[in-house]
Image 1 (cartoon, rainbow, N blue to C red):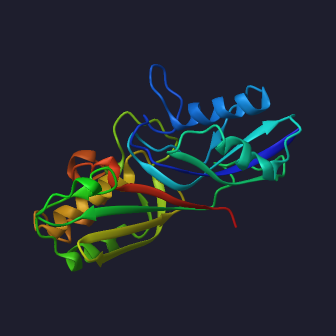
Image 2: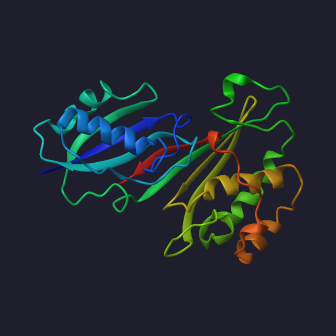
Length: 245
């Protein structure tokens, strides 16, 4: 028995997120089938986290246990031969049997991209959120500072979420302008369902002056999803990296 770790990049446009679902095609389902096609073993992929429909990943991590003779470092080659073009295994390796893609993770980094221009660009539609109105980046940066540290992020959690605790720690939020794009980078110990996208929607409200910067503290303290902004669209979100050491 060996434990194989996969680092996975995918475009989420054509999938109903990471996790297996009935009557839907998911990333997990497609990779599990690829593992079966190459090893003839039924395995269950353990993911470092879930991504929603339309969300992309540059470095989602998963692991699985296998008795097959394919070396861990060779899995990326055999799987990429059968995976569709919008999913690829960047790296594969054998790791210790106690490694768990989710529970061994120390922190995660997400990136959200806003295409901020009045002109619509169809080539960007699946990879960014087109927001055509002016945004004050400095106001967004000021508002984001209230979210740093350890807080109860109940106000920033998607509905129908069953978790043990809504307390999370955000280590950093960086907001930068790159030509017509606003790039927002979040690092934290873990994130609740839709948490990054709800934060983005709330920061947009600060940037377009629909809320005062100081209201971010009230939203945190209120612990009520209705106080925060709308959930930003999924196509602008990327899971960039999962950290283990």
